[in-house]
Length: 301
Image (cartoon, rainbow, N blue to C red; front, side, top):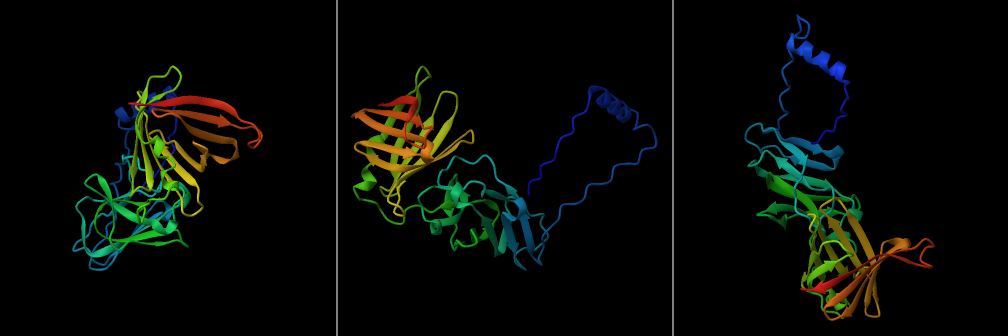
């Protein structure tokens, strides 16, 4: 669990007085500090541990633990960028090394709008971090109506809700419409230093995956796909500074045009075999007219 308190600001005079009282024993005769309360434990009788106002729930059955353990479910941090994951669903079960002799049930509540766009919600599952990669937990299920993903787990670790990925290979002409963006690129934007972008085809030919890096240290990831749900292209982008962008659209002539609602759109225009022009535009009249606010290009390395 994670708790956020509100810091109190002290004036220098008040702070100095407080420090003097501490140095002098608090003015004399102060009571000793109360001992800290012990961490709550879960033992052989089982129990439930929750976090983030119930967004994560670990149900430990009777007999799963041989002795009391100070189990905790905490918001996970420091995870790699992953546009396949549902934001705000990553939790660490601690202490590390804890094993359940009978499976515990982990239930994670999710918001599908915080995951990859254009995919079926029924394809979301609880995953576990294993060797630096995510693996779907065997036996995991998803209750789409309740928007909860559940999994039987046998060990502590880091878990999150992610899309399992395409269930079959993709070979239609629509799936190849964005292939002109595949490759290793330098990204030119005005007088800014060059950034780099690696664009690969993954998921049995279904997914266009982006790995962006600029000289300031910003890293970006996106996944683009031709959705079988609505017959349009969807791109979900996230970056290392908390940015998130969901775009939807399709091919217009040779250009890929993806929009963020009626007032913002981006265009990938393959002007040459080794050059793609990248244009960002804004509209103040719901798409009647457009103003360019970004004009950059990719050149193949």
